[in-house]
Structure formats: structure tokens, C-alpha cells
Image 1 (cartoon, one colour):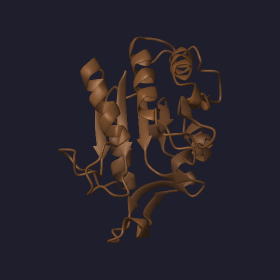
Image 2 (cartoon, rainbow, N blue to C red):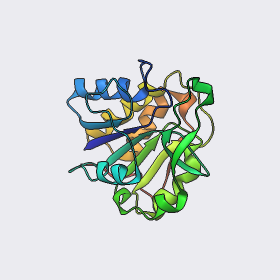
Image 3 (tube, rainbow, N blue to C red):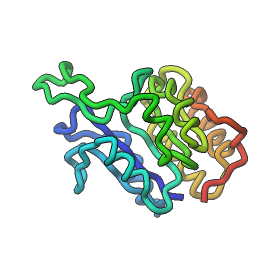
Image 4 (cartoon, rainbow, N blue to C red):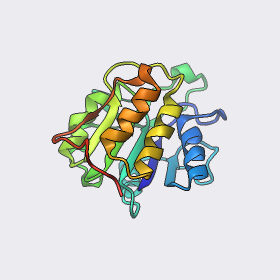
Length: 194
């Protein structure tokens, strides 16, 4: 199993403990393979996303899980933000549209994971592009235990538990996040990522 983090921060100049940072640090301690693509300045290779850069990032050898840490809604997935001085004034500058998501073959065969309930509206587009499934919340969630939830989920997957088993285990430990569910064209509960 290899995790790709795709992170598009609205305020990359502020050093903080993003979910990408916290979860990837945990994966590192567990010896779980991952690669980070982020516009955040804390990473050695800062990534400025374009459609082509995203497509190229998704082609990493062996990557079968994509952790999306980006804003998304019915208009698409934010790839770049404006650079207004005040963070609250920053607006999406480049968006990957639902049609573009649905026609990107690079999503094919990958499990897409996000904590953003607003990105869940794009689940059908990821599935149309051939994604294995989308693991995301059906409604707004508390962020208090999100990182711990995903650490538990990814560790379960790395230990060859099925998607359904790993998700059930994480939900049992963090019941307030039980509305993080699997969206798929077919039942993938018993699928094991290798």
C-alpha cells in the first residue's frame, strides 16, 4: 500500500499541524509508504498544482490510496488559491471541474480518502473516472479526532485489513466519526489494498 497526500492549503505560509503533516508523520513511524504533494512551505518539495501537475502526481508507482487535503464542492476541487494578504479574502484561483475529475484516468483503481464533507459531492465524479471508491463523511464532522481516525484506518489497511474492516475498526474507536463511509459503484468492503 502506498498513500499519496494531495494537499492544497489556503494559507501555506503559516506553519501548522495539518492533517497531512500529522498523518504522514504517523505513517513514517509505522513504516507505511507515502508521498506528499503539497503547496505548504513546510515540505521539502513545494508543489504548485495545475491540472497537469496533479495528473503527474497521481501516477506515482505503487500508489493506490489518495488522501485529499483540499477544498472541494459542487464546482470542483481547488488546486490553487489567490494570494490575498488576508486569508479570509483568498478565493479559489484554479479549480479542477467535476467533468475534469470524471475524465482523469489517473484516479483509476485508487481509493480516494478525504475528511471534507463538501468534497463528498464529487464522489460520483471520482467513481466515474474509475476510482476504486471514496471514503468520506456524509455530513460535517468534528475535526477533533480526524487525524487519529485516519491513522487507525491507514494502519489497518497496511496490516492487510479490508477497507470495510479498517473503516469499522476506526469508527468503533471514534464513534463520532461513524458517518465517514465508503462510496463505491460496487461493494468494496472486503477489498484489501496491497
